[in-house]
Structure formats: structure tokens, C-alpha cells
Image 1 (cartoon, one colour):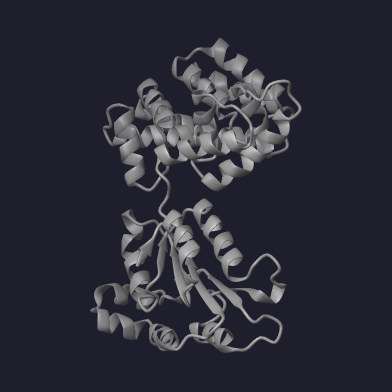
Image 2: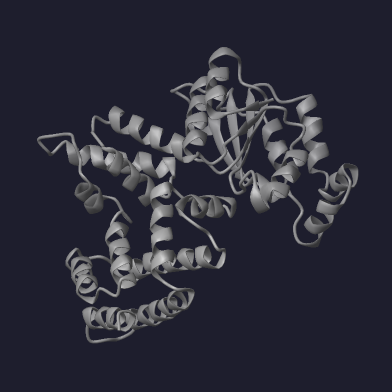
Length: 364
């Protein structure tokens, strides 16, 4: 049986907890909500520290984890054992490559005794213990799809699977608006877009940033926040200024580029980080040019297929940069960025001089 995060929480409200669950997928916000719901349901608010145990299958074998599950605790009549890095149980190296080409029976043998041990435990699970095997490393599609299928086979003895696929842009934006409303702050569409982009669409990071914005808004006469507020408080939100700098460089507008550089310096931006944003913009624009993409929608689809989070506003930025620069100019820009980054980290007379030379070189 496969659950989403919402259906899992609803299931806990109606049914007793199962002996084991398999949490699968990269999304962390829903996973945290499910973990809290399970702990509250099975252990209660007054549970002792002994009632919640963490293990990792990078550090322990399946046999060691199951031995702990079978051990009786004198201090906690009910226990939740959270087993992270569940993918660590899979065979590695040559064994992993061989397992991908073998039949299900052969693959099970190559995986060692883990699946058989888990199946034996599930036939007679320890009362008062809930096991959660948690794997958050792999996506459900792209290059990770085969690994996810191997994980499903390895943990096939656990029938209760909770899936956490990465949220799509519509769900992330809706969640951002809901969290902002719950926090008592007002964000317009532009502010929501900026917050989503600055956090790379991570719902968990959005929740953290909104909590910071809530505390900031409490000091203001109005709960309405502007783009400038987010740029001041949210890490990476200043990338909008860097995008404007990319546009100015693409137009070879030296005066505007130097003005924007002055803005970054005046705001105390950590310049190697700013160059990192600039390099990402150039690399993605170069990929778009070499792939022959046409328009922001193709850019978004292309990068999402590659497993790179890409939102409409970000795709539009990449497309504009790809339109402004030739492939040769983008490669030259990346070389200059690398040289400038080395100069910033070396002993030098002044950061401004280094950055101004970079701008003058790209706008000559």
C-alpha cells in the first residue's frame, strides 16, 4: 500500500500504527510532518528519550537493526526506531552493477541476507515497536529510477510505503501562500516567486524563511512584505540583483553593470557567492544554447527532465541570458568568472578593483 504524506497522516488518525513503514523520496517537508504525526500517535507527548531511536544503514547492518527492534526496553514500553539512509543496505560497486542486470531471485541473493531477515521479522514483529526505514537520496525518475526500483525490491517485505516525490511548482507556491497566511504575513505573487526561487523550491526551507519573515513583520506597522524585505532577509534572494547584472553584461551596458556592482558591494554581498550565482546563470544558459532550446517553457522542461529544479521565473531568466550571449561569450564569461573567483580569494588590494576588471572585460 502506497501513501502520500497527507493520506498517511489521515491513515494514522483512523488506524493503529503498523509494525514497519518504508519512507521513500526526497521531499522533506511532508516527511517531517509524517514523522511528527507518527511519534505523536504512537508515543504521545510525554514519551521518554529512550522511546525514539535513530540508526543508519550506512553504519549498521539490517541484522543489527532488527536485533534492536527485538530487544525489550525496560524504560519504554513503546518504541519508534527510525532507520535513515535505507539505501545503504543495497549492494555497492560491482555487486550493485551486477544486481541491476540480474533476475529478481538473483538480485535478492546479491543483496545479501537483508531482505530475508526483514521478511522473517515482518512475519513476527515485536509488539510495541514501529520501524521506519527512510531513504531520501533518490528521485523517482531520471537516472535514479532504477535505484528506486531496487530499493522497492529490497524492502518489499514492508507493505506500507509512504512516497515523498519532490513538490511541483504549483504545490510549492500554494504551500508558500498557505504558510505565509498562517504566519500572519502578506506576500504578493512576486514575493512568492522570489521566495520559491531563493529556496530552490524546498518546502522545508520555505517554512524556515517564513518563520524569520514572521518575526520581522511583527516589528512593522503592516504585515505586507515587499521584494526589498525578502532581499534583505532571505539568503540568495539577492540573486535578482545578480540577474540584473547578467542582463547588463549581455547588453554590454558597462555603466549599468558598474552601478549594479556598486549595489552588491554596498549591500555587503559575499562576492564569491555572488560569482557562484553568476556562474550558475552562465552554465545553465550555455546548456540551453547547446541544446537548441527555444523559449522559457522549453528551458524549464529540459532542466526538470535533468533533475534540476526550475521554476517559470527562473527559466525566463535563463532564457533571457541564453538569448543575450553567444555560446562563445558564455564560455569566455565562465573562464573570467573562474579567474575572478581565484583573484577574490587571493591576497589582493581591493575587491572592487577585481570585480570592476571583470565587468570591463565582459563589456569591452
